[in-house]
Length: 395
Image 1 (tube, helix red, strand yellow):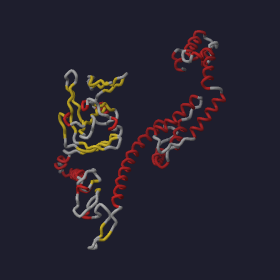
Image 2 (cartoon, helix red, strand yellow):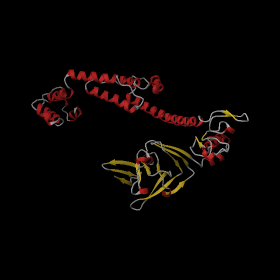
Image 3 (tube, one colour):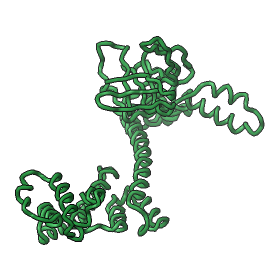
Image 4 (spheres, one colour):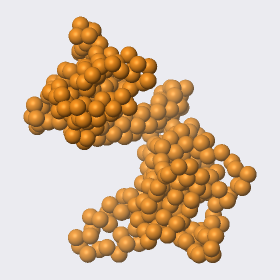
């Protein structure tokens, strides 16, 4: 409201209670346009814009004692909260920002250094102590903005989230291995040889793998810890051997021995994490395979229909992990040719082929990276190519 009055050059009649008749009329009219009719009836007899302003201020902010009481309550709320381990940086910083905004509206501004120090002090000690200590050593908290601190903490939060996810995955595998090992206690056979616990103990220095060991070494029951496939131990895993060969080739690069590395690089292994995509969210449609979902959460185009591809590189393999913790195999990557309604051909490149995927997904993020323009207006989403040509319009 203050900005609106300044734009119309009448703020001084409110700020200094000027008696300029024309300006008072303009200011009063603008104020009356901004309040309910019932309130206008109560203050309509006031003769200056300053009096109208004060009446609105008293109505919304209350008397001085009420305002002080509200401020004390807000300050208590500001001092009390501690970030829970289940909260995110966004959740907690939003709570502090809200308190700060309410306090400013009541006439008391919380200084930014105080806001920054309160934020850092309230973070869970065990989880954030290292980054907080680093920030206190590197930055001057008296001059660092609240937004800057929140941004740094959000980046750190994303980093530790990835690490915790990997640790939990490793722990679940260890728990599974321990459960497999318990039924088979260590004992000596008739020849006096020591046998270890579960998974074949140390026979022939075999690598890690799920499954019980028997004298015939039935590999069909052994599940590799590295790639989750049956038929071999982790020490013999093709993925591991490939990585070792790539590493060896890299080390020999200084000796101009790059021929083997070039051959190995023909086979690419990818590991995708699609946290924002859940398969169950894409239900079967009456048109079946003809449906393509425009997804702003997916980081890559993907489909389960092999027949779509005009060209495909099946040497690319790997896995994709979705937000519901399901994992599917990637069997290639290629390009898909689309025909528009006017008969023009459009090529969708870098689409992953995932046979078990029940839906077709177009990543809006990948589309924008390639130069496309995505707009949402009214009830429609439109996608244009880098030359401004309309690719699709979806309700």
